[in-house]
Amino acid sequence: MTNSKQPRRVLLKLSGEQFAGAREHGIDPLFIAALAKELAEVVSDTGAEVAIVVGGGNFMRGASIAAHGIERTTGDYMGMLATIINGMAMVDVLERGGQPARLQTRLRTDSVAEPYIRRRAIRHMEKGRVVIVAGGTGNPYVTTDTAAVIAALELECDMVLKATKVDGVYDRDPHKHDGAAKFSELTHAQVLQNDQMAVMDNAAISLAMDNRLPIVVFDLLTRGNIKRIVSGQPVGTLIKS
Image (cartoon, rainbow, N blue to C red; front, side, top):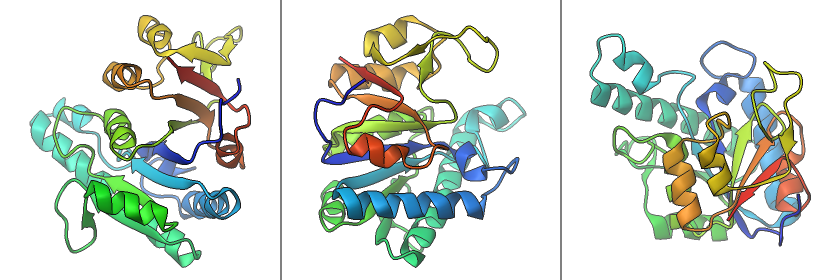
C-alpha cells in the first residue's frame, strides 16, 4: 500500500475504548500521554495539520444502554457527553506536553470547550494546533465514525486515519481465525459488500465513498505509525475509490 502523496491535513478517529488503554473503562493516563507525545512529534516533524474525532465508549454507549431501559435518544446524548470528557483529557495532556490544542464540540458546553466552528477549526490547524472535535455530530442515531468522516470533509482533510488494535483490514476477524488474510488496499465498495470487514459503520464508508475520501486503517499501538502514514509510508490498509 502506498499513499499517492504526503497528506497535508489528516483526521484521526479514536474510539473511546482506546482511551481506556489497559483498563476496562475510564481513561488510562499512560495511553493518552504516549499518544500526545506521538502527535506532537507528527506536527513538529512533518508539518501536517491534525484534527481528531473521539468516541466515548469507555464511559457510555447510547445504543448499549438503550437496551436496558433508557431511551435511545437520551442514551446517545449521554454518549456525546462522554466524548467531551475524552476530548478534555486529550487537550489537557497535549498542552501540558507543549503541543497547542483546542477542544471544539457540537454540543454547547461553553465552560470547557469552544463551539464547533468550521473556519475557526481550520485556522487553529493552520497555526499548528491540534483540534479535537467532540460531541459526535450533535445528533442522536449517528455514530462517531460518521461524525469523523463528516468532520474530515468539512475541514478539507486529505484522509481519515482510523485507529484500531489490529494492523489493517482482514477478510475475517484475525483474533478468531488463524488463516485470516490482510488486505493492503481495498475500495470503499468492497468494504461495504463484505460484512466481515468491521472497519467503520456503513454510513461512514458510504459517505467517504461518495466524496472519494481515503481511509487508512492502522494499528494505533505500534508507536510511530501515525507519523509513517503522514510521511506517505505504507501502513495498515488503504481504503480508496
